[in-house]
Amino acid sequence: MVSHLLNLLKKRLKSQGRQTMPIGRQGFTLIELIVSVGIMVMVTTVILANYTTFNKKIKLEGVTQEIVSIIREAQAYGISNKIISGPGSSVAYGVHFDMALPDTVIIFSDSNADNNYTVGEEEEIFKVQSSDRIKQICINQKITSPFACPGAGSVNTADVIYKRSSIYANINDDDAISDTMILFRSAGETANGVKVIVWKSGQVSVEAE
Image 1: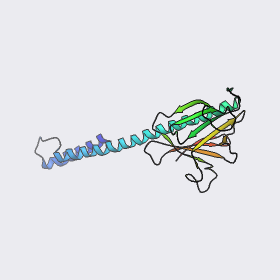
Image 2: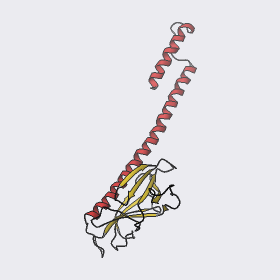
Image 3: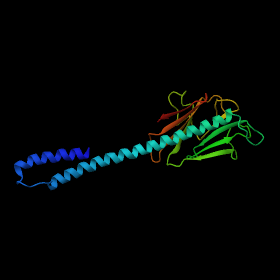
Image 4: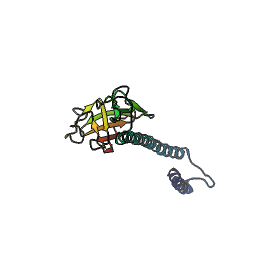
């Protein structure tokens, strides 16, 4: 595009130059050069700005898709009756989200059968390698009108439990909770995040903020 603009500008200047420039004179004047450089700078600035935004978006989408895979993994463990150690063998598996650990997602085995994460129950710990972080955790975001998060629906932690041979999710050990939403954003962003939503039915979905 820059090359095309420069060619058009050069043709126009040459056309004007036939009337005002001495025969044999070629090239750009200082003003013409400044205009050309200005065009190139503007186009380059736009391209770089769009690339940065696009790059952040791609990384964030990659992180959230990996989170979905982690949730599916815990669900598969529960359905398959994966054997775990401790007095609560083969009880349940879950995923723990915590605002105090915004770069961490934990798959845990509910070995004490209390339907919540307890320190020491960790099976796998996933660390987000990019600058993307958990910015908000909400519950019942799909049945609340108007949307109550932040507010009544905002929580500090969310434990999604999958009990033996069941695809259904138990969220924070509360049957009244229909869904939980975990919002991820890139560092420094106040919008344009991605929400991972886990439903009581077992469905996991991803939505733009």
